[in-house]
Length: 153
Image 1 (tube, rainbow, N blue to C red):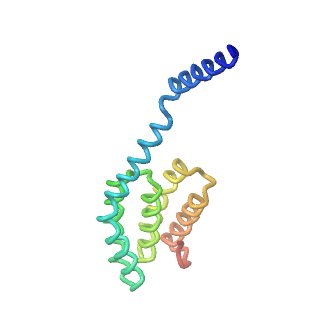
Image 2: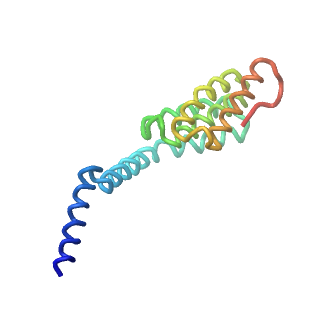
Image 3: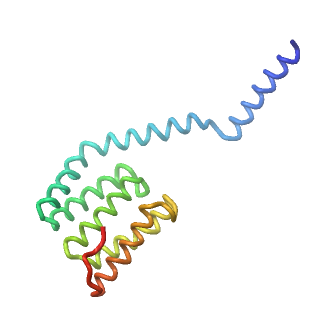
């Protein structure tokens, strides 16, 4: 009986030590999730229409218009979500593709060249979209320097 009490007290003390060492990991996780939920709620009304408009303009062939709207979308997402949010990185990738498709191969190459280090830092060098961004940077740079080809997506 005394042994069981010692184990319970020992476990409780260990839990207190872990909580002191780590802070409150569950509380921290809940705060982070709440922050992300709040950011997504703030983003939704302002950016959903922009995202759909950019897609529509791209599909109808107005690539310059799609680039312009995507730049607005990127600015809104950075404000709502921060520079390193995966949706922000995806928006940067999509904007670079649109820029290249609109005829600005040098601009697309520069966008991808700026995106790659951020993708490596946030997702790692082996992450598929990091690798794709590296390849796209090289292909758009080749296109910009007169290497021909269709570009990269």
